[in-house]
Each structure stands twice: as C-alpha cells, then as structure tokens.
Image (tube, rainbow, N blue to C red):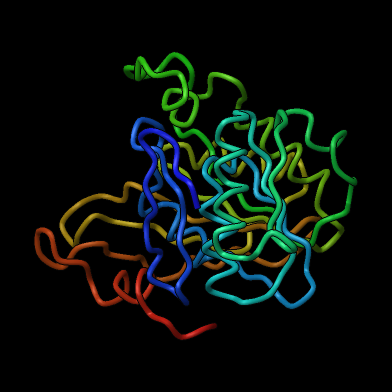
Length: 247
C-alpha cells in the first residue's frame, strides 16, 4: 500500500485489521472505538455509517463482528478516498464501501428503509460554540458547520427499515435535544450508556441507541469508566480496544 504525504498505517489491535490515517487531518479517538463496540450487527445485515470520516467505525465493526455489509457516507472526498484504501488494505472492499456525499441528502442518495443499522459519530459542537480549528477538515469533524443534529436524526430515520437500529455517540449535555429529536423522528430510545473519564469525573460522552418505530422503555446501562488511574485504562476499556474475541 503506497501512502501519501503525512499518512500512516495504524494497527486496530483486532484480527489484524489496520487503518490509514493522515496526521494533519482528524484522527479517530476512543469515541469511535466505543461506538463500534456498542453497535450490534448480525449476519447479512446492511449498515450505513454517517459522517464516516476515515472509515474507522465500519472497519472496526467488521473486525469485531466478522459479518455485515457496510457503507460509509462522508462529505470530504479526500477522506473517502483514504477510507477506500483502508478497506482495500484489509481486503474488505467487497463488503465495506465508502461514498462521497452530504449526510443531509443521504435518503436521496441511498434507498429509503434500506438499512438494518445506522451508526454515526457526528460533530459534537454547535456551529457557534467553542473555538474552531483553523484546519477545515478538523473543524468540520468537530463542529456542526455542514450539518446539524436534526439532519443526522432525520436522515437516519429515513434510511432505516421499520424496526432498524440506530447507534450514536455524543455529548451528555445535548441529551435533551437528542431525546427530543429521536422522538420526533420515531427513533424510540432503547439503550444508553454514560462514559466517564474516571470514577471522580462527570460523564463526557454518551452512547445511545434507538429503534425505528420501537416501543420499548429506555434501558440505562452501567456507566463506562475510561481510566482506573491516570494513563491506565480500565479492564472494560482494555477489552473494548484489545480483546480479540468476537461477540
């Protein structure tokens, strides 16, 4: 595999899978690993990953589950091209594909009600909140510059078949907005896990899933603690990152 300037290959520590990342662009963090662990996929199910970036979530999900058919949608064409090379690097291009396009138009680009699972690790911050990175690629990944949370929920609902499953990681501070939008687009909240940096810190991330047209009550699962001591992951996070056992 020929790498471009500033690119590197990272080992995903699972079944030998690897990913290409550009050091000057947005590189994945623990939130992508958590989402890939949280989302569940069954054999022959079709999965759409919105705001796919480097393609790490579909690639990690394939490494973890060894099943499913994945499509990643990303608006930045250079990231799409790099993600496609990562799929080829893992000899998975027959069932992991990436397309360039606007998430706001996802349901016009792909079949409505055509997917069993939709995953998304969207920009967390509103357009007018916080300092933006001067690099547009990184800014787009972190801030709602090109889309809003309502766009993500609306398009996810349109892409999912009735009974299909939606999985997202986001910030706890936006839970009221998230819950309201999920109800608006008939994505019944099903599971939620709060993620804390350690036992003494407030939650900084939330994993949430929903069912299109579901009726079940929301299950709030035990929280995840990232670190047991400074710089040392908890056993749970070590398992998420490194455990070679399939689900």
